[in-house]
Amino acid sequence: MSDFFTIEMSYNTYHIIFPRIILGILIILGLILLAANIKKVVGKEGNGVSFKFFTENYDKLKLYGTMILLIVYALALPRLGFLAASLLFMFAITLLYIGNVKLRSIFISLSNSLATVLIVWYVFGNLFSITLP
Image (cartoon, rainbow, N blue to C red; front, side, top):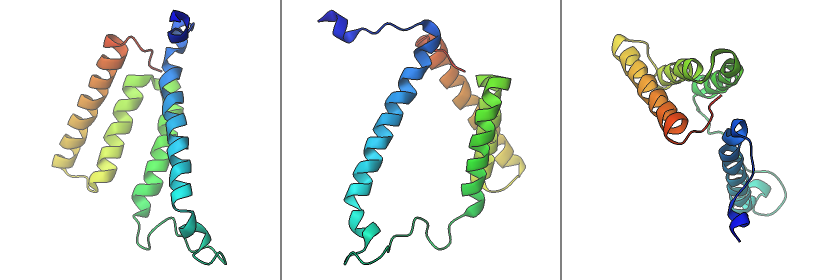
C-alpha cells in the first residue's frame, strides 16, 4: 500500500508534476463549463450559433498585450532564468493592467514584481525544493 503513495522521479523533473495537475484540472473545468453552456453555443432552437466569446467593447490592448507578454516570457525563461524573466514579466504585466506610465504606477509595478517573484522563488525554490526553470 505504501507504494501507491510514492513515485519515482529524478530531482530535475519535480517541477513538471504541478503544471500537469493544473492543466488536467483546467481541462476538466473547461469541459464542465462547455457542457453547462451548450445551449448558448448551439442556440435555443438548435439552428445556429448565438454565442459570442468577447463582449462588444473589450480591451484589445490588455488582451493582446497579455498574449504577447506570455509568449515573450516563455521564450525568455530559458535564456534569462526564472528570477530575471519573472521580474520583467510581472513588471510589464502590472504596468499593462494599471494602464498608465506614471511614477506611482512604475513604483507599484516594481514593488509588485519584486515581492511576488521573490516570495514565489523563496517558497517553491527553497522551502519546497522545487526546481524552477
